[in-house]
Length: 315
Image (tube, rainbow, N blue to C red):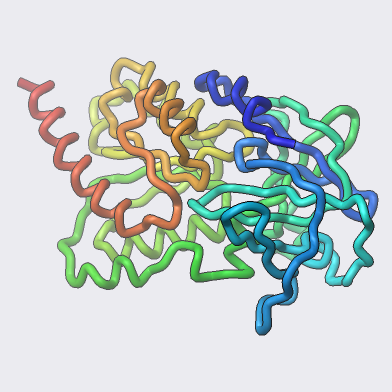
């Protein structure tokens, strides 16, 4: 099953604050993945085991001309080595410029819902630490746990996630007090981004857990005389409960005063289609999440441009 046509409808719309969830099952439980991450669905195939791999890595297979790593999602979630059934499926994903397959038991369909209807799981479910669920939603009458596939892959293969070494290789950089606003729902990634930017010299960072919280803050200061002393640049993820990054970008760029602020979309979902969508909303830059070094250079450039814009507006 190729899902490109299923994805076209949602990808062609801009700033609707909606998401399409593909619902699947493991041991009778319902889980979900953002359709934007799904490349195709395949019948499970024989997989070649790899020595010294993470226990959740089942191995590799080569469906056409590309080697794809297979993650046994059932084992990752339960810690149990479940007996594979003949009609199980591989969800082949593409995000963070990687192609990875996840073994699941069945696909139950696709639902379009608003990000407003996705709730962040209670921290008590994961003993106070961030769990593997990015949100809980009701899809077609069922409670569905939307999994954080970025976190799963980062835990299995840390080298695929944000690397602080990219910033350390830049050497000493000047301190930058320009105020930055970041909208990122993943506690893990929020901490990694903050640490990387702080090492790059950025000392004035204000974090928000989703686009709605960031928008509430930005809207509350949008008419202040000292607006541009409170925020100079916005960095946003796309996938976030309550309000996604595309909706946030649209609201910022539709506001007569906020629209001068540079907006950087920093997401695992950036591909050609998503890039077109971001451009249509007015995003100034769009980067794939592991590119933290590139993000630092982009911030440098956009802050210089922003200061020039504000000077021109004041003349």
